[in-house]
Length: 249
Image 1: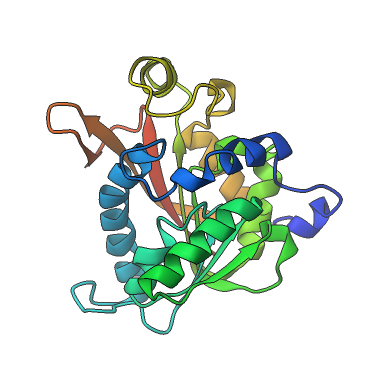
Image 2: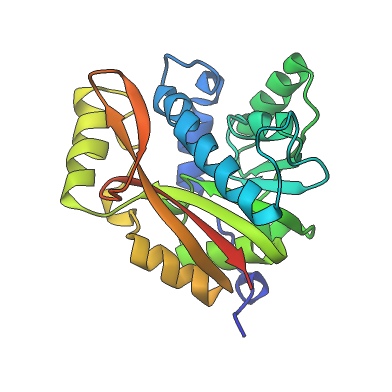
């Protein structure tokens, strides 16, 4: 039997330092040319992967206008709502949570402007009791103090048979060169200190922690930046950024 987030109830899964770091630039979430430009760009291949795997899992036609109508989705560490809004447009009943109150305020305001109904809450996964058909955790695990405790909490929010989708950075020499030196110091896509390479998670480590939490990984793929066309694409290599999809047994 996998352990649950209740076993870690004495500690939060959020890092105060990391929450403060992202709240400091919260006003830039929806600026596609600012600090979060890479996330705006990487959303295209990620949404493609998400809809492909989730449509297959739930037996939905992803070419329909709202293929996921009737299903619930939780985006953990949702930031300004960059994934919440497109997932809501696809029919999901979306709940977005983030430990940073300023991030949630920005997300709420933007959703209201767009006329999209999303349940935003300032919370960490262990602080809510609902369970969902889908749980997302994109670019979050490398910012939490205890990755295993965080994934137990994520799994506790997922219904049996539900789908988990996560994304992070691999701990390789290539990721250090591109995601730290390149993105933060050379290209200045992100503020310096956004990432700590030592907290990057190898795919094998991510899968092992998910397995302990009762989630089996079903698919793994990478995303890579093409500097000539200034776009991100889905690729087989998981040397730097990668996405995984799993199912709760």
